[in-house]
Length: 152
Image (cartoon, rainbow, N blue to C red; front, side):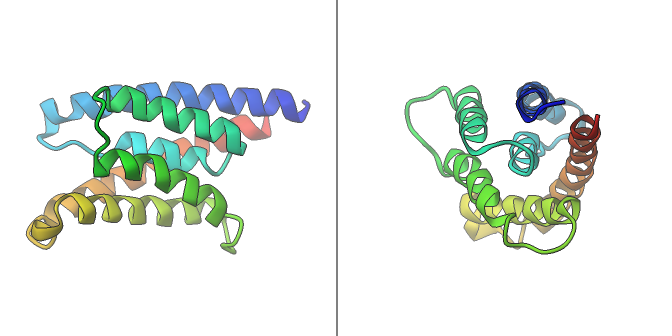
């Protein structure tokens, strides 16, 4: 399979995962009383597999879906900037990409919480730990999905 077809499949998978992540993120709260950052996870994992312009498109589409209001918030800025930064940083980190993606997911969630609830960051440690744990499992699963599609 040529690089173009492989990239197209991964791009399509990324779009589907962002949509699924959005639905999961918005509905998870109804069942479990907290809202994990599944969209951020999907974007971070996508940063390990997509080209730069594909990633930009998916990130901006995600920001548009999540934030339909004209004012940007800290959360949306992190949702946009962190995956792009991860795209550039992942070329410098040695080791396994799956492990690096988990580190970037955990860091992204910590940065998100630190920017949004800075004053209550330590008081919310249980919620943050739960969010990181659920997101790491989700990130590991979708990373493996990308890997399987990439090697086919």
